[in-house]
Length: 497
Image 1 (tube, rainbow, N blue to C red):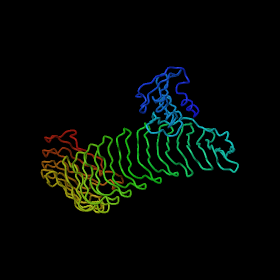
Image 2 (cartoon, rainbow, N blue to C red):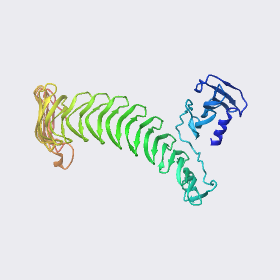
Image 3 (tube, one colour):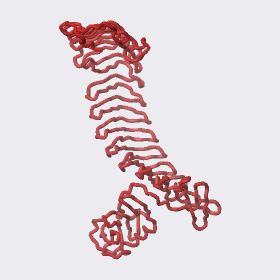
């Protein structure tokens, strides 16, 4: 709708079409105290406005509806004069708007919340200028200027080839001023807001190419400065906070597309500084701690999405320090130890599942690397669960595992972190289960886990041989024998390979 059409509506108030009108108590439009709602029928629908009962002057919200009750225009009057923003709508989408002086106290303009970008409404077409100025063209830019070459009046840029307008606004005495707009090549508005001598100045709105609102924020002298909000494509708030001198500053909050709060934190000069809380979409805590100069500091805690605590410890200048603990999703301990200057260092314990039983392994860590002998114990209970040694974080030398009842579960050696040489594995009863050999994959010129190599004998839990034969570099050699649990030969009793 053009400015002239809005003024026409503002002046008309239903008198331009024959029809009947009537007043009520003002509840329909939310009229100010002392005003009532009037309705006037039109050929294409009807109008509603607020009118003071005492003197018949329009005062308060105004709406124009199509015959199917769809809102097609909205604005407000203050003491008979159009005020605030007047909007033309189609299917709830803003087509155009005109801004008048702010409404006075007690007058609240209707807010149809038109968040979609305007299409078209290009304003100046770049073909003529006002009195005292002439049209100037520089490439894809056209503007009006005085005889002295000072920009005065309309200014616009156009896309190469497409011919559609790219941006437009006005100059006053050589300085940008007033409301400016930018468009996508499709003709959809991409940004709108006021400009001053030093660039954007005041509240600006940006939209995506699909017309959904992207941001609403405040500028000062071309820099983001003040309240700032970004939006998800469906219109929900994505982030909200403030800027100062083009850097995030003060409290910020972010939200999931569902509207649930995601992160709440504090910024200073573009760096996180202060309390930090992150939540899962369900509302449960995910992380909680603090930052100083964009580095994690002080106590920190994280949780799994089921509400179970995952980690707990402290940071100093972004590095983990002091005691730290972690848990699995079931709340069972996973690790515990200390950090020094960002490295795990000193005595550490790690919990794991070993042949179906939970064990706790304890040993030394040097600057994040496992070193020396590590001893495992069943948890709960504390019974010995085995031993292994590390050299620069790699398992080396003899290793054992022990069943909770004290029976040996396995014994053998590691070389370079892989099984090597002869190994034996036992049933919980102590009966030998498997006697076999391994060779390093690297020695065979391959990669991966060590394959079987050499004599292989597997036993039933009653001590009878189950399978026996020979492997060569992971491949069965000839002449294998298989037996049932009673010792009788079978065609294939299963050798576990």
